[in-house]
Image (cartoon, rainbow, N blue to C red; front, side):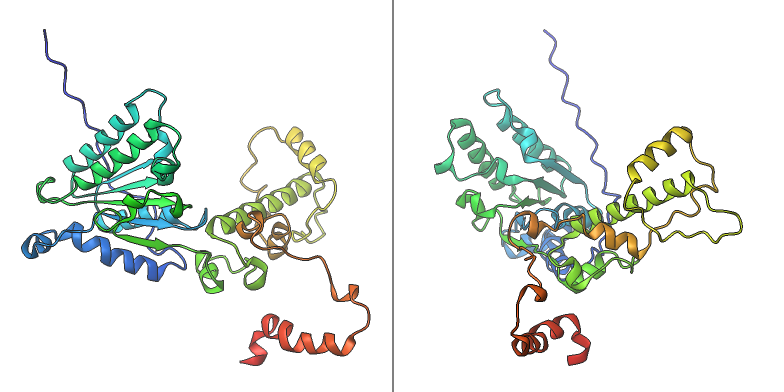
Length: 342
């Protein structure tokens, strides 16, 4: 009987997309590079001192704050092989299959070490064992713990493997996973402040910042840019449907508020093929486009119910004019006109 052919190992390429200069995360990047770069590039220092190198970093924070992008950027900066997978992708209804997939991924990481492994949504397979309902879930957690314990330099031939896990719910992870020797470090990526939001899109000064985008994470800002581009696209369809006279200046800042849907439908029927090179010339995103998009884009904090914006205005408060003026001077103006108080 012929022996089975050996399993063909996938070629893991170096990360080529993503940039290290992630807006508003400079301190986090610096901290993680110091924690990850030395063990991966100079494991001999740990062998010489006899100290165990770190095995994992846990990134946690709200959705859309850049955990996956940060892991890709670190791998690209270090120029190392990068194994990335989503934890729910290994879950299966066949008993023993999730554990086998997990073992194969860790075996592959040891074969191509030194390398970086990224596990997204790690809480999907490593929940607290006392809260799990099925034996399979407890076995997956136990297999994950065993695989991480097998990443010592003695078992990897002196070539390090470091795990980066990402989750939105760190408190749901099994406590055994968060102890030293497994996920040695936990880093929180929160909602960026005003300076961080400005750094997310430094080449787009038209994006409303400050109070207008308070509570926005990186994904929310991307959604804002996409919505603004859609507003600009609707405008170009109106221009195609009703082209201005040759003697009239082309007004491109007018945003259609009504009938835009019919304009798009008419334009799609009138121009079923690709537009010419000159037809999209009036299409560019303006500040009013962002202002309109801002009314249609909700931040993560609002969607999750952490922040609400009341619809009560000063006009709804009858009388109390002296108190209104005092509150305006003490609270509103320092926030809206900060430069006056510097």
